[in-house]
Length: 201
Image (cartoon, rainbow, N blue to C red; front, side, top):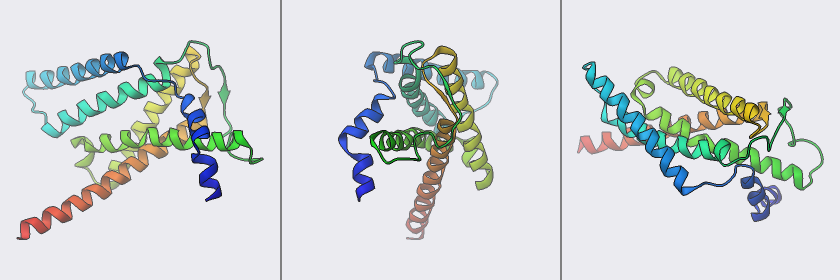
């Protein structure tokens, strides 16, 4: 209970959220529309080559486009150039040592950073090229694509100076994607059980 109060109190969480920056409604709508147009273009191109796209893939693509617009803002767009310069290779940076306010802040930040990628892992699992494969392959796909996206973000932050390049971020982002996949598997399992019972009636 003590640890929970230290990490999830309003001041610590507010400071941790400040590390991500603030969302702009206008930019959110703009990036979402660009993403949706990109999904539409892919569907039209597939039809041009006489390849059908499943409705679930189209819906997952739209949700992913909206979600990526949020990630793009939180990790890059809303930050000023050269505002955060540096490389941190310590996996346990800020997590070990004296239990002071900075320690709890870093733990809260890591938790939020992990949670940021949970929806990504879940939505990615909705695509047919993922969920139609065996569980182990699904997991590998989600982990690999989460790692690639996280690396793109970290490298872009390093080049633009809009964030520190941190190995810790790579690990917790991938963990978040993995948790999203696990949630997808649990939800799918429950839905299949419920659907099976309905069919038996």
